[in-house]
Length: 389
Ligand code: PLP
Image (cartoon, rainbow, N blue to C red; front, side, top):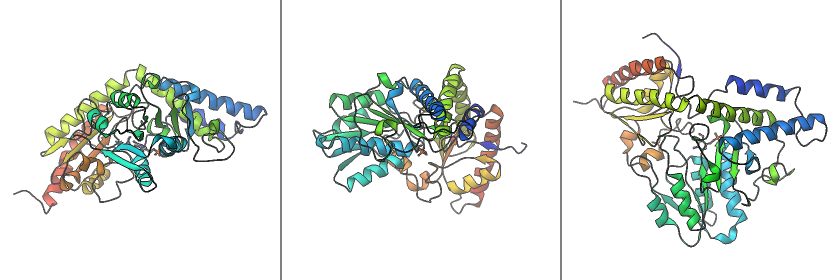
């Protein structure tokens, strides 16, 4: 098959959509006002920030006043967890999260564990799902906060967030969910979910990098992590990154349009063709994560008797951009904490491959991967010291 370049790492980041970039550009130059200024330039920037806030709120069925912009998804996770705990220090010192969170959550919990909190880490099943029963059993009278991700970045599994949130609400415990991989890709109705805080990040949904948002349920108080000029209702000081916020707003509108055009069913259909094709054509490979409760753009597999880094390098050489897990850990040789928590052994976890599709991924791209990957695996196995036989 003819060489082509196929980017399949949309979970790591997405390209900025043309409409998004076009919307952003004026706010770097002629519309460069500081939204806190009183003059026309300032008012213009403030209106743009307000409009973007409204679009993001609409995407998740919330009110504009419930959205606070942050420097990125990681910053929103930190603000939610530390800010809510600091604001409610009388609630107790026990906090709960899952074993498969992004480092922005899990490392925050580890830090809190060294600073006076007692941490319970919930297990996941072999498909990476957190069970409501395990959460119910973990909550104590002194539990202050629970954070469980909406959908996993490495294997795409979507958690039963409504059930998990309902358990927290029943017990009067704050519930945060990291929806960085889910927002803009599956429908989220924050107003009707028992969720107190929800994290989003623009660069996972065709917006720019370096801008995130936190949905905060009305009435919930957070202590700011960044003190200063009192922007963002005093919760996140610092002059607003207006071009990025405008881009995030446009990305939210794009997500709504894509949803109306049926993108979710298109992308999940070609994703399933990819997953089925890999399992059929690559001997000793299997799907990781949940087959049905899964992000529509997310494909992940494990290939036994293969060293993942070698597979990624050879795919890259063939023009295919893939990853073995989360972007931030793919440079390390340690197997992913997510796959280990799902019960995979180290050797198998080393053969993990994540292929995450985007709005521009075509049927031809899938054909190309299905033609290339089996040959890459075969060559690597020929070279491998673990060669079967
Ligand atoms: N949470 C999840 C689930 C993610 O996948 C990521 C990014 O990979 C983040 C948080 C961090 O988002 P950001 O890169 O905007 O800090």
